[in-house]
Length: 127
Image: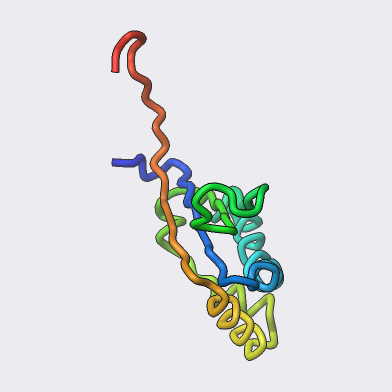
């Protein structure tokens, strides 16, 4: 069982439809990243990082955008809503909602992987 007070990192994998990668990234950076950055400023999130594969077709190509978010703790992960922040950051809610719908239409797949950090170590010579 994870320590409920420790930071929690979640990997968010996105697989965009063929030809949609650049538009997905553009919409993510325009509409979702500012919400995540506001949550870093508030202390709910400790870190947000974005990755794309270095080489085209790397590995199995299950994903083409990876976002890692480190939450302050499990309570921060389970609480909170982007809606209040989105309303404050994006006064034109009709455009915001339209672009967010479009961003998700560009996806072939999306999955989240909360991680439990393994801080314990096996004794030397043992397993």
